[in-house]
Every structure is written in C-alpha cells, then in structure tokens.
Length: 304
Image 1 (cartoon, rainbow, N blue to C red):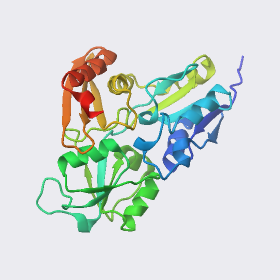
Image 2 (cartoon, one colour):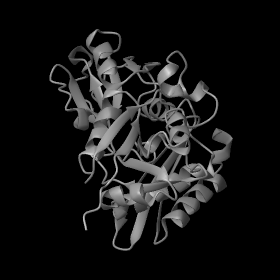
Image 3 (cartoon, rainbow, N blue to C red):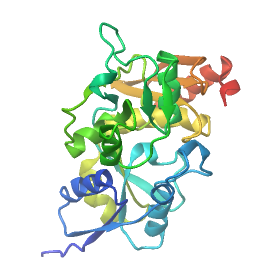
Image 4 (spheres, helix red, strand yellow):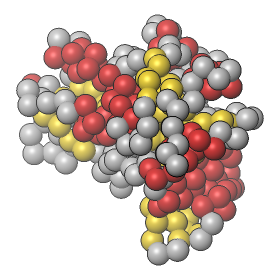
C-alpha cells in the first residue's frame, strides 16, 4: 500500500543565509515542501545592537509562534540564535553536521599590517555588533575602533567594500554556505586558540512540535550525534550564565571517543579581563556545567 506523504511547511527568516539553510534542509526531505518566510524582531530592528535589545530569541520567537499555531511544521534556525530554554510544546528534532565554527576577519588590503602575527593595522575601524567578537578582538588588539554593524552577510561585505570599515568579522560558515567571493580583501580565519565562536555556531537546529511524528521523522536522518553532543555542552555552558547576546562569552566543543571536550571563555566588555578553561566529560551537560562552575569560582560573575 502506498502512503501519501503530506506537504511540510518549513519556516525560515528571509535573509540570504536563512533561505539557503532552509533550502538545504528542504532538499534532503523525501516529501513535498513549502518554504514560508517569517520576519523576526531581529530582522525588523536594525538601529539597536543585540546587547541592547531586551529579551531573547530575537531571530527565533516569531518562528516558534508559527510552529505552535500550526502555520508551519518545522523551523530551521542557526543553532547559535536559539535560546537555551526550548519553548514548551516544541523540540529540536535534528541538529545537522556542523560547518566550520570559526570566525573570519575580512579586511581591506590597505588595512594590512606587514610582518605581524595579527595582520590588522593599529587603530583599524572594525564593524561588528557582537559583544563576544568585540571583547575578544579588544583582548588581542586594544587599539581597534569597533563600530556597530548589523545586516545580512552580503550587506556587511558591501559596507566593507564601500570603505565604511577597515575590517569586519563574520562567521566562516555563512561565507562558505553562500559562496561569497572575498577576492578583493585579505582574510584571516581566527584560530580557536584565541578566538572562540558563539555556542552552536556553524550548526543548524531543526525545530518541530514535540508531538509531530511526521515532521520529526522527515528530518531525523539529518541528525548528527557528534555535533549535537558538542553543541549541547556549549549551550549548557551558556545556559549557566543566562546569557544570549548580552554577555561576551564564547565556547567550542568537540567529541573525542566517548568524551566531549569543551573550551569556554568569558570576558569583560573591554577585553582587559578574561577567564578561559577547558573541561572533558562523558556527559555534555555536566561538561558545560563544570566549565561554568569553574569560571564562577574564578570570579566570572563580576564580568556580568
């Protein structure tokens, strides 16, 4: 007997990257689909940096509302945008295999500093609205002048091209997924040894209603257990500080055998103080909790 598989409605934001991510998931489904674009608070408000915006879920709440109301069957999120507390009635049905989680420094050729381990000129103007990026950059190079920069990835690259900044910092995963050419600029992948990404960066979260077996089964084959385990440790670390975009905090985890190894950093806004530590544990939740507890014992809460 042949079963008819109903169409699945996939919710996404309307940015180029968000649409790419939704199309990526859609292309892996064994059923018909419709992509539904939804504008979020983060898309509507452009004149306020993330750390000044109240609440959480700037890029996810409206998508979750649409899920709960039955207007869509699944939402595709950048994992780093998803709050650590999952909304009641919803579940993360799959976490995709991670892209490179690193950040990348993209800078104009005239801002290049010769014969220096960090090749950006002193006093350079850098565009970013991420406190995490600001603080880590200030820690490396206190002389930089950081200015707010919002917008989707192509818009940020365009602003750099126009000379509004000497450099910008972007997630490498977004550049890779969109296939953006950066030939006119110099680039530097920022090593994890001193520049940690946002928890979950590079991974996609596919969210559904917790009792929607059809939607869950449609994407379960996309779930990558190793990525999910690593991201769980990072997000648990984040959760302990109740943080979203309001705290300069970064984390990266990877699996080694049955263990997960997670490294985190928390910084003062000016980058002058920081605590960095690494924890290994078989349980990703415990790993994240232990990492946060160590930092709290070292005085991390004074940074908040």
